[in-house]
Amino acid sequence: MAARIDDLRACPVLWTVTDYDPDAAADEPGAGLDPGTRLAGVPAHLIPAELGFCVVERVQFNQTQVVRSVL
Image (cartoon, rainbow, N blue to C red; front, side):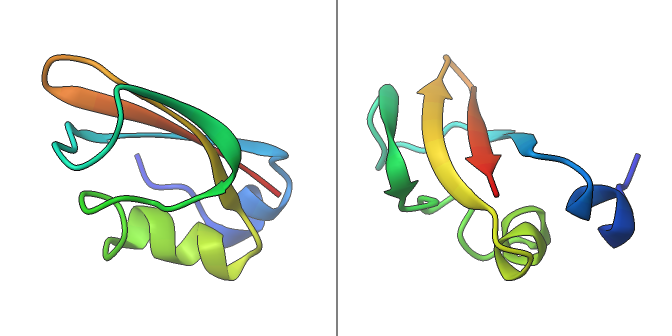
């Protein structure tokens, strides 16, 4: 299910699930984190980034990662 841009503007927090990123730490909190190799070039990151979202947390599991972005 795809979110519309207008819907994203109304969200204070965005959670994105992607493939595991072997170049990123297992648990990484912090303001303005790098999106990492799995997220950097994909629309799931690029469009929210254009709206002002920045990555503030990443948690990795065996095959996936969950990335929290905030406005």
